[in-house]
Image 1 (cartoon, rainbow, N blue to C red):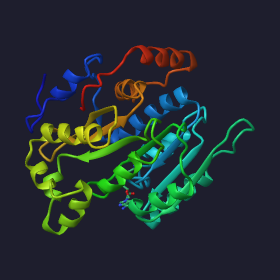
Image 2 (cartoon, rainbow, N blue to C red; image 1 turned 120 degrees about the horizontal axis):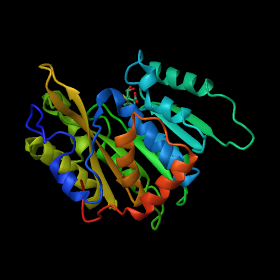
Image 3 (cartoon, helix red, strand yellow; image 1 turned 120 degrees about the vertical axis):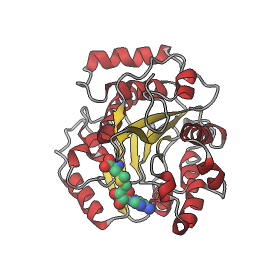
Length: 302
Ligand SMILES: C[S@@+](CC[C@H](N)C(=O)[O-])C[C@H]1O[C@@H](n2cnc3c(N)ncnc32)[C@H](O)[C@@H]1O
């Protein structure tokens, strides 16, 4: 397997490949430009399997205002059929919130059969999510996906805990797709960021965490979702980019935590197919049935 400039293995990091014994090795690595396509494709599968659902996006504004074609919230809203019923979109930046409100206005009218609500909230997600879920609690049976696509340290660990604990016991927890910075994490760890990093990590363990090598860091953080939050499954998906010397690096990982055995299988498929033509209804039926048979390992994270 080829190695990236920072010594990491390309395609899939070794610990993940060994854990996901039933998965084929990833053939089409996702690059930073295509991360939104991965999210779009996964939600396409998710909605097909659940036939309903809630999408929470904690950091929902477009990363690049000039490239709204690669904006996760926009792509997920554009998925058809429109099976997801509730959207909760958050951002702290007034300009991004204006874009989110415009996105809401731009949605084509619903047909009689379609049900959909879109709510946009401005402010710090870490406090807003508590208010919003207090006012609109998510029922145990409601399939819910939460994207935490922060830049580096904006999402507090207590917020991740709050989301994981929101649903009543005995139901699948809210699925989380969590952004873990990699290539610039040491650069971002400045003295002035220390309070934010403590909130992000949840305690002072961030110093020992940052001392780990890249792959070990990803494995350790992924394991927090199973060990600390009690998710049945947690896998990390590397997102690649080029560094200033033109070398290939894992820029960041997206950690997928879920309780549903189909979820990791479908995320793995989404990762492989994000850039291909979307499957039709018959193929989706088949994919859903195959995912049923293909149980992921449940003996740990990553
Ligand atoms: C990496 S971008 C999100 C990219 C987006 N998911 C996409 O597909 O293009 C991070 C966003 O988080 C917002 N943000 C930063 N801190 C925040 C906070 N505390 N609460 C809510 N939003 C925040 C930024 O304004 C920015 O729009």
